[in-house]
Length: 117
Image (cartoon, rainbow, N blue to C red; front, side):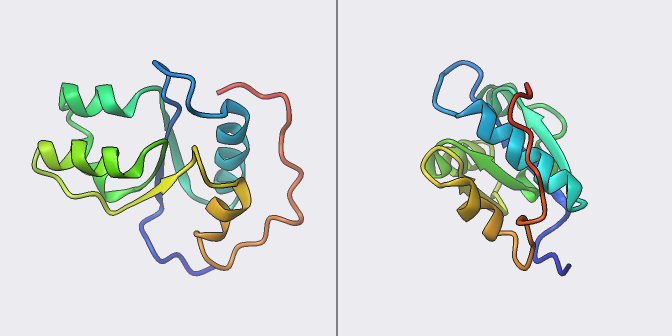
């Protein structure tokens, strides 16, 4: 499998809001981990940026999957960082998100249905 971006993926679960389908997060994370991606699930990426945690450069250079891509890009810009790639987990279907990772096949994968993040 050829990866177009670095191997890290950061998924925000928007813990302070109910924007994100948590089951979708679990399924996307499980699939990407199975495909060899380094997946980090963050409870609240907005808060992480506001706190300016030391790992923000790593997050910014990863593929970010979050609820509002434009807001995420703006938050990072407000602390002087540019994001690599931001995908919309709130409005995009799981297949569209997974398809954006290139030539990966998820037809063979049995995704979990009752897992928690």
